[in-house]
Image 1 (cartoon, rainbow, N blue to C red):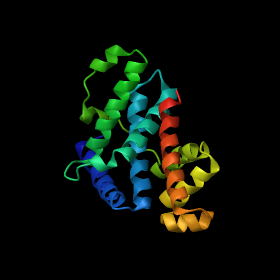
Image 2 (tube, helix red, strand yellow):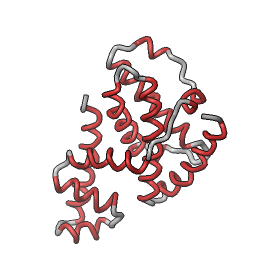
Image 3 (spheres, rainbow, N blue to C red):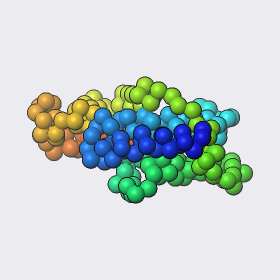
Length: 187
């Protein structure tokens, strides 16, 4: 991918991420979809003998992005921040699986971006999210769908579910925590 394509990717990603940071759930899903597609392509290239683990690592990175989204510095490129997190997850994977030689590979972002191919970000993000949501208990799944995906307030979700606001908050918190555990321990 040329540096112009890298700039084009960042130019498309950054406004979406900034909108997501301001609470736009649609932009959040689109931004994560774009990042997931890039991560998948990068990890497929970096882990040719472990293609079954690629999706697990992508999910770990996406959850880390979600959890760490407050650490993003708007003066920096979103893609650089995303791939810094991805690098740590990849190093963790190599440590866990005994690939110590790979720990010393040079991490070259230009080479990373040049090898990435685009997938349909909406389809892949939707698939990833559906897999995680389907693994949750019904109450947690519904609370997350209503508040995080449909954009309802906690009060509106509570009214829809016939539950208290605090119960909805607890279900969302537990559901997000369980999603992180699923990705972390899926191996």
